[in-house]
Structures are given as structure tokens and as C-alpha cells.
Length: 86
Image (cartoon, rainbow, N blue to C red):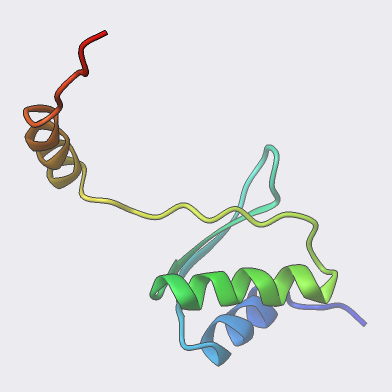
């Protein structure tokens, strides 16, 4: 019996309320890169479900951010930094 990893991954993601955007086989440290749409709790729930199943030893989560917004906030914050006198 062979398992369709794409279909089983999609089933888990949809069961927790997420949406699978892409599923790609890759070379390197990991076998698969999967892009998932969902809030933080959904994505963490997905990770816990997969790790607890024993099917995976590791699953990394990388969140897409708005680079310009993040660095605008960093610049705003930098102007407020006060270095304490020694």
C-alpha cells in the first residue's frame, strides 16, 4: 500500500482550517516545501499534528512578512532608542 503524501498532507491542513497553496518536492535538508495559508494557531496546530503522528521528525514554519512595513517600524523604533549613560 502506498501513501499519497500530497493528498494526506492536504487532508490534515484542511481538517484544521488551513489551505494548502503549494506542495513541492525539493532537494536538500527537507523532502517537501509546502505553502500553507492560515493563522498562527492553525499553522502551529498543523505542526503539532504532524510531529505527534510520528511521520515527521522536524517541520519548520516560516511566516511571510511585509518587508517594507517591518523595516519602517524598525526605523520608527530606532529613533526612540535611548542608550543609558554608563
